[in-house]
Length: 125
Image (tube, rainbow, N blue to C red; front, side):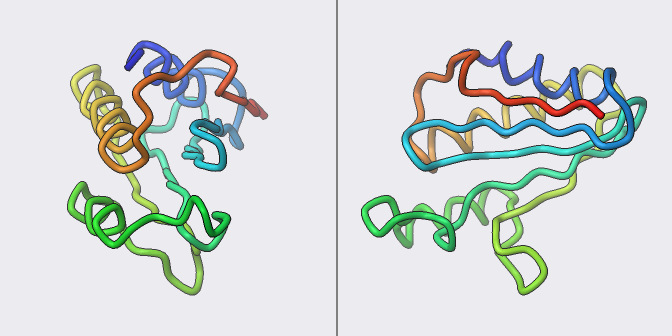
């Protein structure tokens, strides 16, 4: 797993753009993870795709759904149909923890062992 790409994505939405920054990481055919923040902020809101948006052949199993919760993702709710979490980034150590958290989610839940630069889409505004 190329963690440097994940780190770069978070750094972009925290240090560039404006008040409505986000990135989407589309991987493994139908799966995605997204994060939103603002330049200079120390909070990041993240979402991981739930079964609500997945085709039948890609639906997450019970063990995958349980793993998301075990890792620290909040279950989907009426207000947010994806799994979500809010993370704090005060320093480099926090950023490294977030990168590890995302990498673990990608590999252990969604089975993504490789991500590439072209899997990321950015909006910095």
